[in-house]
Length: 238
Image (cartoon, rainbow, N blue to C red; front, side):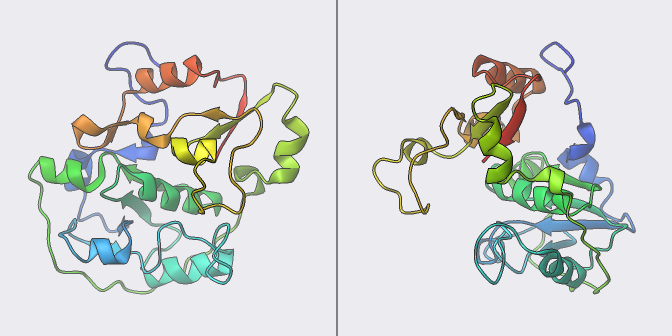
């Protein structure tokens, strides 16, 4: 990462600023996905041209409610939203990009690399008095093909053999209560955390005083390094 208080993110293509999006709303291949749960997104204004995600943005397997959607399930969802394989996809939410990042990762996992998160989401957009609407456009269905990249997900058979090698860092980004496992949260099949995991709640990466934008790259790097998450390690967030 570049140094200094204004240091840029090393992969600037993974995130766009509201000003950029405002200038590209008419892009012919642009597809904007509002990643808040449908009941939230429908209760407030949204960015013009955005499409409503029809299921919960965790995008879990729609048959089992676990893991991640199958390739066929994602193909049906994205095709229905008018997202083709040539689309430039922008994901946003109103909750510090927690949900937008999940949708971003799912698309990335299934081979769609031309996808970015809107930095700060809807709060940052509205703070700049950029246009919003209460009318939802109807997407024109298209064809989306999903191909999973097994290197972009880590199952137990990947993590367990490396737990004691010092080469892998499980990064637990859940809440403090979930990390400790007390009191029981009843949101996981088992409480507690992976042995040897580092805990940094996801909220620590966000500047909540700046309309939910991500903290500068240099601050994020320092936060990670203070907790032993360094570039020489394989990092598995969960």
